[in-house]
Length: 238
Image (tube, rainbow, N blue to C red; front, side, top):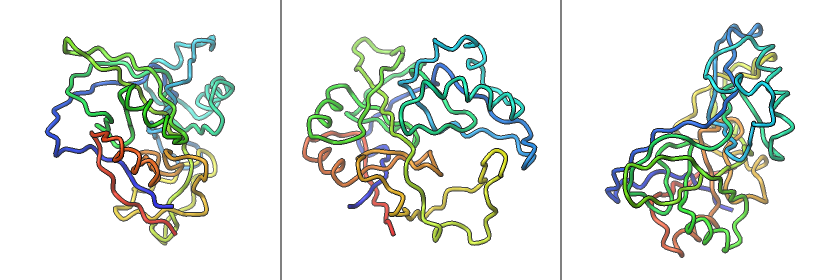
């Protein structure tokens, strides 16, 4: 199986604007007692997760850093609501994307590397092809145009990792308290084939979650259906 990353197709000349954030979020960690770092990831997001059953909902509405004990307490409140296979980290976001948008938009929209949107009709065509792992979630965009598309946010689960051979040989182990690795994503990525899912055609990497990965089946379906908006860059695996 061949794998690819998705990037915005700038050759189409679409000048689109998206200013948005998810409705809720976990806080970052302030001065972890293990590594003394204040940090937040934020690339992992679960737009399908509705936090309204949580009694202390106001704790998830403001982006901020908290002591690790408070972060862990809030993690336990949301964990029962997560989809199977979900992983969280400081800054993980939940609920629909809210904000302003202005097109034109292609069938697929990858305005940011960690975020993939699709027009409803495009997503339904891909799902009809039997592609796996394509979960579309409603967005709450306010469009600056009279005719606006229905854009859905895809929810790729975090699965798979980069191969150790493309990472610095002298890297430090993750912090035993908060799990932070502190690595910059390498320019030349190599996927660890042993960690890749066999039942998903779209997913994001567990260790570098700004990277969304798709299979050759996904690429072939997009080309066959004439779905525009993104380009595909091969990702080797070993």
